[in-house]
Image (tube, rainbow, N blue to C red):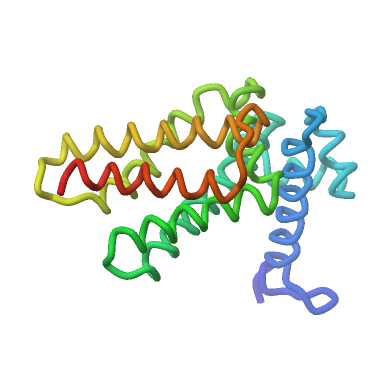
Amino acid sequence: MTGTERTWAGTTLADRRATRRRRLIEAGLELLGDPGGAAVSVRAVCRTAQLTERYFYENFADRDGFVVGVYDHVVNLAHQVLVDAVDLAGPEPRHRAEAAVSAFVTLVLDDPRKGRVLLLAPLADPALRGVGVQRLPLFADLVREQLSDRVDDADRTMTATALVGGLANLFVAYVSGTLDVSRERLTTHCVRLVLGAEALHS
């Protein structure tokens, strides 16, 4: 029997490690997503997760690697909810746009921590400087795949990149409180922008 297969209190070593990592990520959401800008230190993370530093370093090399890990956790969640929403929406562009926008709005507004981590933390935490830009193609590629292939790939890439950048700035303004509109109006406007991008290539 290997080390990862041994059980203790009904769980394997791999299960316990995964649970500890989830607790650390959850602590990161609490701290990095705090509206007051809570300090994210190894000590604060361990205190919030109720784990020792030994378990922090079991998962992350240092504080900056942890911050990037928390950010990427939310990036992957956002990407997955968009993929799932589009897959379930069917072929109609309006339905796909409405489903994708609604799914993203739900993710970043129903749990404001995720919205602040995804949209505001890259502007405030030095560990994330440039990381948001590096992750942009992940979302631009998803948008590009939804655009009509009546124009070449370069045009679709430019449109997708512009759309994702514009939407990101719109949500930054909303989450930071500088854009004072209702959630419904924000959602409707974003759907129009997505459909407008599609119309460029129809």
